[in-house]
Image (cartoon, rainbow, N blue to C red; front, side, top):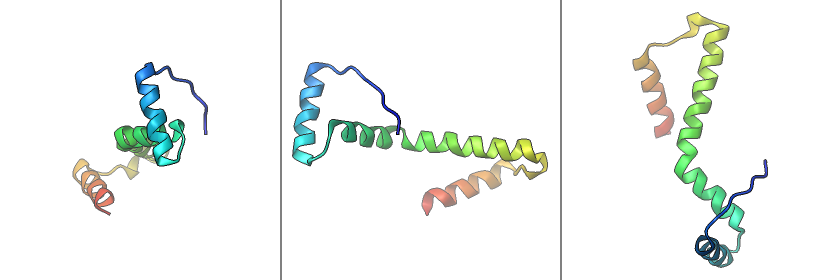
Length: 79
């Protein structure tokens, strides 16, 4: 896990502090959960793309047609 620092408006910080207390967790955990909800799928897509690019660079013959890729991706999302 990496540490990062963000600046929040005071109202936002106070609101998160209250939510964290009610949920018996930390503000950091609330922020991580929110990021996962909002950006998780995009981050996963980037990882998938990087994996596929590495496979292609290692073996260009391993490429699949777009339709096949989209079918596989849809199957993963549905699972």
